[in-house]
Image (cartoon, rainbow, N blue to C red):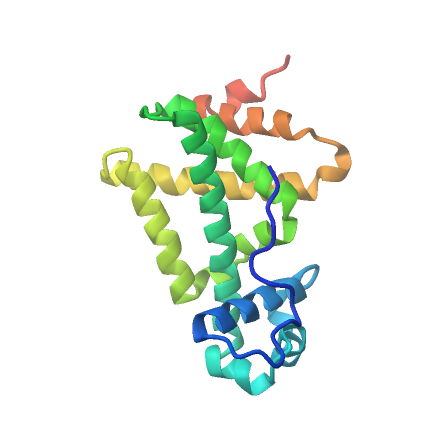
Length: 207
């Protein structure tokens, strides 16, 4: 599965009259491109404005500070991941309800394929500084609430939902960092599914 960048190419905004939502989306798209390979918190508004083809003042008009802009890029990545998950699960489910044991491998593979296609976007999703932004915190909480609700919304379900998402994020980032070792995506998916279904000892037993 591959993912296309959303919106128009950075730098195409100069001289065009756009509605506020479109202009804001273009600035976020430009920021995402500038962030690639860099710490987003080191990027300046001047760089983002240049990539978007707008003035620095206009960027400030839409985003009060860099933290808010970084958060919007985060939310853009989160929406893309959730759209990929919905598409993968929907394709498998058809008109029936999927069991947990059916959903889990699909979710794990989708996380890994998303990260493989756009490593920078995925790393942005686990940026420890960005996750504390109020908008990001709210979005992550809503995702956990939805997952916990699918398991009954009990306190135990909330704990498990947080653990599952945390493992998927950490495991996927770990795989990205170890890709030079040549660990196959499908092998990593099997390992993560095994941990989630059976626990660490049975997953890592000698074969």
